[in-house]
Length: 271
Image 1: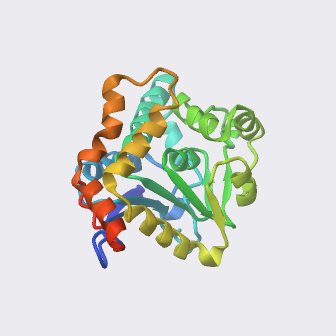
Image 2: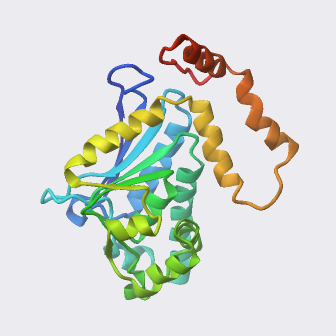
């Protein structure tokens, strides 16, 4: 049975507090949410839907339960596909293009994306998590890129994600050893922002999503865009600099400072 990625919404409570949270759930239960081709198509389609949705404040990406109830984000690619889908350099490149489209879609999505990692997060599963903006994991989660055991390398886009986040020396350690390691080491290597006790994981994910959703969506979009842009050494253009300051002409700016002065909670509309 093919895997799927489902898109759900949590609009409970105030639309600008607990609401506005979209959830992408990885589901390939018999294979601990290993990524297969249908899941990439699902992801790309859902990202197009999310990009057009002005009511979204934050997207949470997480793994669904395995068929035995085991917790997993994603252990990597579905190896059973390799013979039919990635059995030549040409097939490998075409499949790589599909994965690149999904990874770039996550990175460029205007809404913040939080990876909720509980269980294995390896190979392409790790690359997907690294394409998200924030990563919070449970202490029992496991990480690694053991693809050299399959006789293959990660693709250029995946490699860049690992190198950009972990740094070149740590990336080489991860890739050359192919070792699977725990949450504490993942935190040391900057692969995750926080590792929390298993019993606190769900509460921490919910609290993190609420904190993000409480901020102005236009500000979140600009922060996400320009953190990525400023990693490029090319100077900002006048148009790019002007865009950074356009927030001072928005309704959300006026709402934000007035709410601060009035000692009340702001209600942002993305306008």
